[in-house]
Length: 88
Image (tube, rainbow, N blue to C red; front, side, top):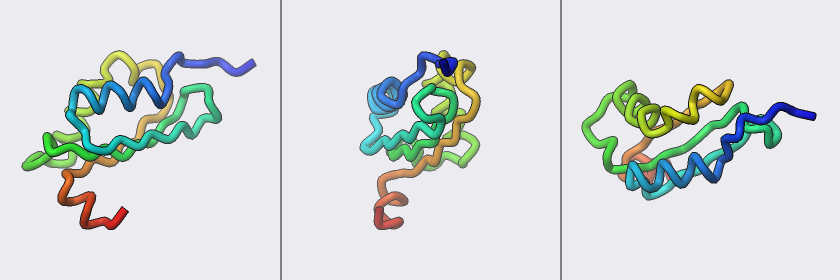
């Protein structure tokens, strides 16, 4: 039986939407459901004017309880304008 972290994509998504007022949050569990590896696309206007490092720190602060429980966390952080320019 796989060891699970207790962290789910849904939990991460809700926290990011609520605390960052994110317009879009797409979380992908890369671990086959055991909650050990996630990648994310996060779109929030709270990222405006912030460096990539500052954006990641903001996200990590929101998920400070969850990040130590998982093995891999890869966020991609965009403002609404940047995300729309990607055409996704």
